[in-house]
Image (cartoon, rainbow, N blue to C red):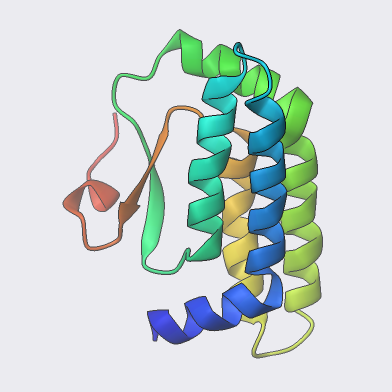
Length: 133
């Protein structure tokens, strides 16, 4: 089922959103200071291409640097990527078949706003459901 959802996702919005993350990553890699944002954007592009069967968890030990970086990311690129997920999610929820895809887009909004200090893991990985705190 995951494979089928991922293929449908890729065709109906995933590829377009991944291209947005790739563009943001390339722009961020132009300056040396923003390379960590570019790397996070490339990681999110890969996740956006094939999201079902994976999830995002907090990376242990990410601290103040990630928090400050997330504020810069939010201002520079996060808001328009989140807006893209919201618009795509609403469009996908118009049909019954697209509702799981729309929900998937809505689940990507928080991580598109604040990607630093996060880690993408398989849902089969025990870290995906480990208690946080």
